[in-house]
Length: 316
Image (cartoon, rainbow, N blue to C red; front, side, top):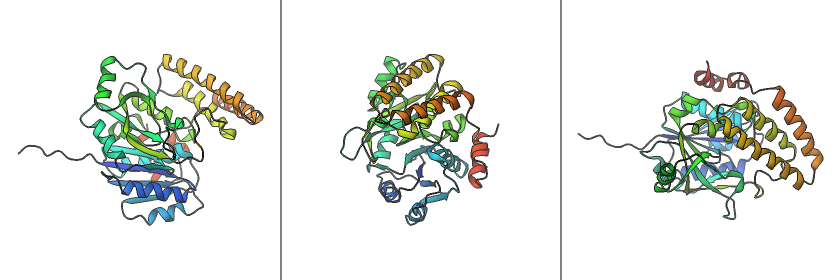
C-alpha cells in the first residue's frame, strides 16, 4: 500500500510573564487554530498575577511549567524548547510571547509554506492592534540569497530571510537539536536575532505573509524606539553576538555591526532621556567586552526537569 501522508507534529512554546489577560488571548487563539498544535508548553517566568493558574484552566493540551525565577524571554524559550524536545519527538516548534495572538490560519499557512521544502524556519507577518505592520518584528531578508532561492521563496508565497522573530517563529525540531537552544543569558533583546541566524546559517528560511499574528505591545514602535533601561541589553547582547556567536559570518558581522551602531546613534538622538541611554550604553559596552554568556546548563541550573532537559540537549 502507498504511504499515507501525515500531518507534521507541532509543539507550541509560549513564554509568559505577568500578562495574564493577554496570555488568555494567546491560548484561546492557539486552541482555535485551523490546524492545531499537538501540545502547548507554557513557561511561566515567576509571574505574580496568576498567569500559570489561568493557563491550567485551558485544558489538557496546555502543559504549564512555573519557574521559580524570571529567566527572561531568552531563558523561557530555551526552557520551553528543551522540554518540548526532551518529552516528545515533534517535527516543528512554534515559538511566541504571551502578547502574540495568532490568526486562525497562522499555523496552517506556516506549515503549508515549509511542506516538502528545504526550509528549516518560517516566520509570520506580524501586525499591531490597528492592523499596521509591526516594525519591531520585521524579518531580515537574506541579502546573499541567489536569484533561484528568491524565486523559490516567492513560489511558496514568501520571502527568503536571514532572521526572524520569536513572535511566531516556526523552527525545525531536528535542526534545534543540532544547533542547540537560545542563549538564556541574553535575557531579553537580540535573543531571537542570534538564534534565528544561528538556525539559518547555511540553511534556508522563509517569511510567510499569509500567516498573520497580532503582537499586542503597548505601543507601536520599532527597534530604535527609546528603550530606556533596556538599552543595556541591546548593547551588551549585540556585542556578545558579534564576538562570541557562531550565527553570523565575518562579513555579516561587519554589516550588522555597522547597522547596529547607526541605530544606536539614531536612538540616542531621538531620546528624551539621553542620560539613561548613555548609562545603558556604557554598562552594556563594558559587560559586552568583559564578559561572555554562560552555557545554558549553568544559567538554567537548579530548575528541576527544565535543567535536566537542557542538559540532555546541550551537554558537551
